[in-house]
Image 1 (cartoon, rainbow, N blue to C red):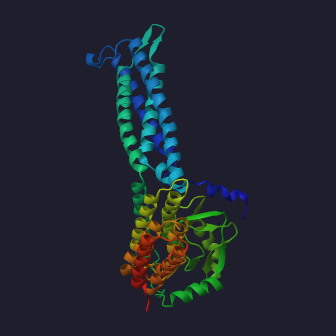
Image 2 (image 1 turned 45 degrees about the vertical axis):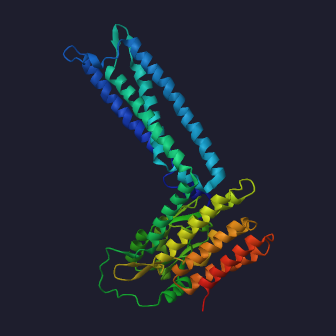
Image 3 (image 1 turned 90 degrees about the horizontal axis):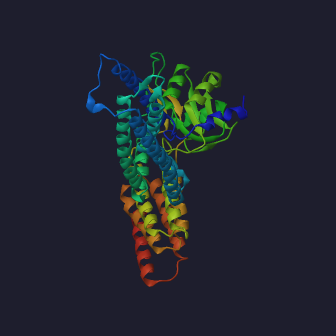
Amino acid sequence: MLGFKQFSRVAQAVPGTNLVPVPYAIAAAVVVLLAATLVLDGLFGRPWVALPSRLSVGNVDDARAILGAILGAVSTVLALIFSVTLLVFSTAVSQFGPRLMPYFLRDRTMQVTIGLFLATFLHSLATFVVTGQRGDTTFVPHLTVLFSVALVFVSFGYLVIYNNQIAQAIQTNNVLARIIENLHAAISELARQHVIDTSNLDPAQPRQVEPLGAVRRRCTTEGSPVLAITSGYMQRIDHARLVRAADRHDVIVCLASWPGQFVLEGEVLAHVLPASGQADLAAAVHGSVIIGQHRTLQQDIEFAFAQLSEIAIRALSPAINDTYTGLSCIDWLGDALRMLVSYRASDDAWRAHRGQIRVLVPHVQFADIVRAGFDLIREAGASSPAVMIRMLQTYARLAPMLVDDGQRQAILAQVEAVRQSMQRLPEASLDREALDAAYLLAHKRLAVD
């Protein structure tokens, strides 16, 4: 049943960006160590067990003074970490775009640093509470206080590592390179062999020989639809789970959308062939297709091009006017396209180990990816000869690496679009000569017979 209650799935955060698990896990581990050291301190207070004098922290007043100083310093630094981090990230987001925020939140160094300071604060606070005199009994947990001091050393030492990590993370070239690294992983996953080892070993099922296009058309026209139960961006498809479920029921699942597309509640999410298997596969389809409120780079390669494009158009905007960052984005977009065409294209079919087609995904068009990367940059940099020249040079350098006429046509369309934008540039003989030379070179290399 469709309805508002299904939107609970959209509450999922981008994987790895939740700031709660790592700090709380570190704090929980330190609390366990606190219990252990308190037990040891209780044993050291017995007459038959003595703590070495060099490990003593003095009397109860000395111990509480040390713990009070630790609490004041750690609480101040913890508050500063949050405030300064948010300030730095908000500045970076204004420069790179809000869709880059998950890169910063996913940083494990930041999560560990927050966890260490939180754990140090809780440990010192609990130790401060149990340290004191109650009646005729004075309890000074020497070992526990020393452990609090050790936690302070570790926390502040890790703070230096954290500051260095943040300084590196917000540099433009490092941000661009990280996007390319994630894109490489996504392309590698899409290009690898789409064969899933299933437990169904029935030898009676023959290998499928029907053409892939015919299977896709038959699945769409004759199959039964599975409707989306929530709205949001398709983030990831668990292909292995879906292939095993389809193989178990001997059906074919043809997905109607690919990662990165926005799915509406009630819209067709997939078709199941034969139609009689829809009831058995609906739950598996919904469980295998992850939908959330954010686009991610796990399987959405177009999103990487859009992110690089967003950084470029922000840099080229009149408010920032950072042409060099725009040129760097064009360079990295060229490398991203080089990476994309270097992998063998998949036929978009996922098979069981016997060769039976079980899952079909829509084909992502190369031309769509090129437009996602370059269209907005061309519009934002239409008044900059440097941007136009760099784009044409990038297209010319890519030409020898393209593998088919379809790819050449897609890049050639961009070259002609740049040519049209060049007509609106102010007349300057030096710029015009460089633009014409770059255009002629790119057009010559990309010419399709």
